[in-house]
Image (tube, rainbow, N blue to C red):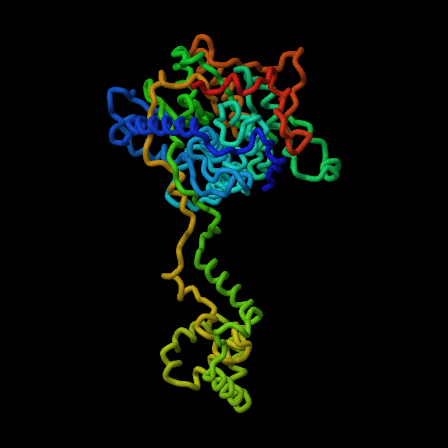
Length: 540
C-alpha cells in the first residue's frame, strides 16, 4: 500500500516538550476525566428512567432491555485509545498521544467503521481474535507505526499540512481534511472521502467524486501520462465507496436543542457512520442514542502499543513447520569454526563408517530406499512405528539414516549421519501441542463498556459521518435526509442540493495536490467557501 511522503516539519510546527501551563492544563483534563468515569454504563444498568424504550446504534434499533444484543453491537465497533511507547512521530517526536490525540483517535474510529462496512459489511459481528482476513487487514491499517496508512503518525504528520503543530489538538474539520488526504493512498479499499463544507451537501459533486476511477498517486509522472483518461463515468458499477464528512457548528457556545431531533434521526440511518465531537478539549466518538442520552466510545484510556503484524494463518502448524525447515536450509552455510558447538560428534562419525560399509555390502537396501522415495507418506508412517525399535536395534538405525539421506532430509554436518536433535525437520504430529495457535490479539481494540452523555453537554462543534457503498446506497441516503433528517429540525441541520449552482466554479475531485508533499494549507475549490478550521475549533 503506498504511503504519503512529507517534507521536514517547519520549526514553528515542531513538537515541543510541554511547559508549565500545558502541564497544568493536562492535570485539569485528568481531573475532569475522573469525573467522567461516573458516566460508564454497565450493560445490566440500561433500564433506568433516563433511557427510552429503544436504543439506536449505528443505524440499527434494539430494545433497551436486550442487553446482550446491545453489548454485542457495541463491542463489534473498533475502539482506538491513547497509546504509549509507539515509534516516535517523525523520528524525533512524541512516543505517546496521551493528552492531545483524542480527536485523532476518534477520526480513526470513524474511518475504521467506514472501512469495515466496505470490507465485511454492515451488521458484522465481532468475535475475539477473529480470523476474518478483511477485518484483520482493516485493523492493521490503524496500528501505531509509520507504515500503517491511518496510524497516529500519519494523521499527525498530515495535520502539519493543515497548519497544526505537532501534539496540538485537532478540531472536527481538521481531522476530516486529514482523513480525506490520506484516503487517496488506500489502493485496497479505493474509498473516497468528501468533506461537505458550509453545512452544504451537493449530490452531483459526490456522485462525480465516487465515479472517478482510482489513480495511483505514487506512480511516476511518465506512467500516469500513458494511462487512459480518468474522467468520471456514470455507470453504477463504477461507483466507488464514499465516506461523507459534514463538519457542523450547531450553536455558539452551547449546542442548540432544536437540533436534537435531527441527530436522533441521523443515528437511525443505515448509512450512519457516527459523529466525532464531544466536550471542550475532550473529543469522543458518538455511536447512538436512547432518549436524550448519546452513547459514545471514549479514547481517553492509555494503553500500551500492540503490534498486530504477526502473520495470520488458518493453519499455524504449517507456518511453524515452514519456518523451522527454512532455518535448517541455512544451517551448514552459517557454521563458524569459532563457535563452541560441535555439529558432528565421534558417535556420529562411527555411525557414518557403519553406513558406508552397509551401503557397499547390501544393495537391496538402496532399492528399498528408492521405493520409499516415490511414496514419502509411507516412510513417515514407518518412521513413527519404529521409534521404539530404533533404540533397541542399531542396524535399523543405520537403514533409517540411509533413507533420510536419499529423500533429502537436512543434516547440519553435511554427511550421511543422523541429524542432530535441533536439526530434525518438524512433523505436524510433533508440534500440535507446542505451537502457539494465533498471535493476533485485538482485545484492546474493542470496549466492554459504553459511556453516555446528555445532549445538552455536547460542544456545538462536531462532524457527521455517512458511508455509502454503492450508488443505490447513496440515493437512499439522499432521500432519507430529505424526508426524515432535515424536516426534524427548524432550521434544518444542513442543506442538500441536487446540482451545483451554475455560477460556482467547476467541481474538481480531489486526487492529491500537484505537489505530492504539501506544506501550506490546502484550498479545496471542490468545496465552495472553504474556510479554515478556526470556525470549527472546540472552545475552552
